[in-house]
Image (cartoon, rainbow, N blue to C red; front, side, top):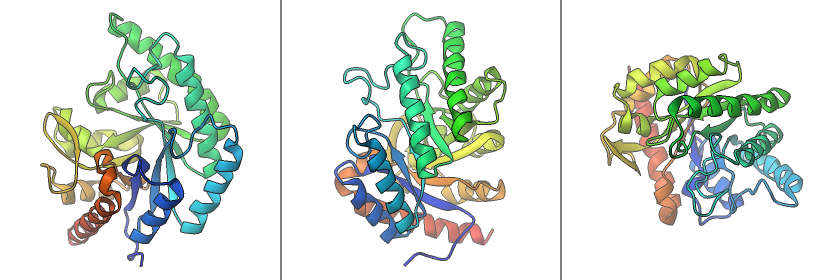
Length: 286
C-alpha cells in the first residue's frame, strides 16, 4: 500500500532495471509505492527510433496513468548512439546533429507522456578542442534543442556529471548564462555526483542549483569515486539533503539511480524506498 503523501516524491530509474520488461518495471515500482519513474530512452525499454514508436508511447502513457506514476524522460544511455564511444556524439562533436535529433525525439516523447522535463548531460569535449570553442558548440546545440522545447513546453534539465565537460553546478550555471537563462533550461542535480566531485559541500550544491532545479537523482557515493551505491554504503547524510530539498520547495521527482543493481533490481528498489521513507520520518521531525 502506498504510504501517506509527503512533500517529496520519489522515483526510480529504469536504468536500474535493465533485465526487466518496462511493463514489469512499472508494476514493481507501483507495488513498492514509488511516485514515479525516471525513464531512460534506450534499446531495451523504449527505443525512440522504433518503427511503431507512437503506439508504444501511447501504450506507455496508459500504463503510467493506470499505475499512478509520474515520469521524467532521460537520455543518458551511454552507448545508445555509438557502440564504441560512451555518450558520443555530444553536442560538441562533429556529427552533433545525431545528438540533437535524439533530444528532439525525447522532447516529443516527453510531451506525449506528460513528462515536464528531458534530462541531458554534456558528455566529454572532443580531444584537442579549446575550452572556449567547446562552450560555444555546447551552447549552440542546447539553443537549437530549446527551440523544440518551446514547441512542446517541456524543459531541458541539464545534469552536471563527473568527468564530463560540464561536471559541476557552477559550470551548469555558466551554460545557463550562455543560453541567456532560457526559461526552459534547468538543472538535474545528482546528489551522489555532487558529493563525488564538487569542491562545495552537497548542501551548498543543492542551494546553488535551487533556482533552476527541475530534477533530483539520488544515491549514495564516496568522495572521488564515481560508483552509484545503495543508501548507507557511502558517505552522504541523506536526512540533511532531504530537509534541504523540502525547505527549498522542490516539486520534481527525487529519483533513485543505482544502475549496478539490475541483477537484484526489485530488492534494491525495495531497500531504497524503505531507506528514503525512514529518512523522510527524520526530516518530518526537523
